[in-house]
Amino acid sequence: MNFFEQFYDIFIVRKYYNLMLEGFKNTVIITLIALAIGVVIGTVIAIIKYFSDSNRVLKVISKICDIYVTVVRGIPVVVLLLIFFFVVFAKSNNGIMVAAITFGINSGAYMAELIRSGINAVDAGQMEAGRSLGLSKLQTMRKIILPQAVRYILPAIGNELIALLKETSVTGYVAEIDLTRAGNLVRNNTFNAVIPLMLVAVVYLVLVILLSQILKVVERRLSNDKRR
Image (cartoon, rainbow, N blue to C red; front, side, top):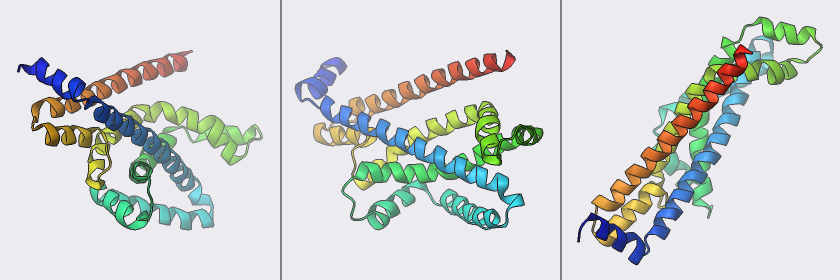
């Protein structure tokens, strides 16, 4: 059989497309939830570190955040996944959510530095301006500083999203079906390595290209808004 006949036989006749769709769906779910968790953690840490200079309690919390960032960034994500799956959440029956939390916590350590750099890039006078308008420090951060910081860090966050998407390919280490594991299962069952693995590679490539194009459009719109 030629390539197309083999492709049709594997994914249509034998219906392995269902497995691939399940893996694709799980990959997208894990990535989106992990991104949300990472952004929340990163934003909270960045804000804590921003205000820690003038608050003794926040200084202590900031040190704890530093430890978190150092530890998480120093442990390979595969090892972190194994620890969360077999130790921290050993009794959980929702492996996909455990994977999402793990990748989210891992992403949060990197997001914290990205978001902090974006906040620091905003002119320090913006905080004073917000305070002079009667806003609290947190209100100034939310309404004035963070929206401006997004312009600076959006490309970096986009790169983190793409990296996060590709990192989820190790979810198969804990026997959960993501896109990569689905392709590998098809390979095991059909003894055909080329078609399923090439399909997995193409799907990842298409997703990365789409995300890159979307980010370019968003960046362009933010740039146009800034000129107005």
